[in-house]
Length: 283
Image (cartoon, rainbow, N blue to C red):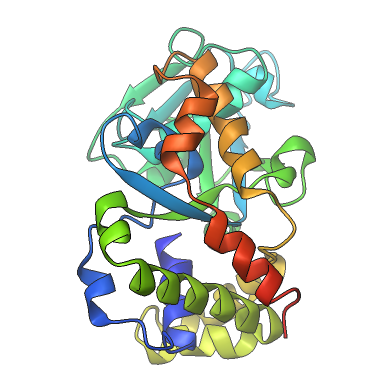
């Protein structure tokens, strides 16, 4: 999420957005599950975007059965940095996914929490049976001779997961209320940049190289990433996405409030709706 937002920001000047926006208490790496959990611990306000998130499982010849769906991860070992969805947003993703298929993430899966772990390395080393990655990591995983896994879920296209946003920008609620114009300007600029990336992925990938965000030899990987992702932010219901994930985390007992209470506290989609009316299509 952070990478994509930086590419968008580098590709399109932020149309008058003041520099203070970058000094605001913002954490743009949070996914929707972390946002829901964060509401109970801090003042969050988010808007959503859509990224490609993939679940890869490890094929192991020593196992008696093969993983064919997320349900088959019951009893398996997964490395995370923390089992607090606020500290480790990816644990929140796992928890929501497992809750949706009737698995209790606290009891039915062996999560190994290591704040210093590289979860991809743990997967490649065989100490973790599955890993969640963003789409720009997939080519590198596929190229690794240590990778014996296969793609299990692609949230970009697969079933229920493709119907909801996975991620968003989250900003301190008090700061946003005190600086409404700056918040709106940066939101508009990022979403309009989103449209430009969709129209010209090659230019966006080149912008990342020019800004020093990744080495020139990584250009092809990120160009392929942009071409494989959808950047359409108009079609999916942002509030419904939050509610869906709030329900899963509530069922996992990872949050205390009711799903509707959490959505009311966590979101303000009014300006997003206004932007959808103002810009009904990319162009």
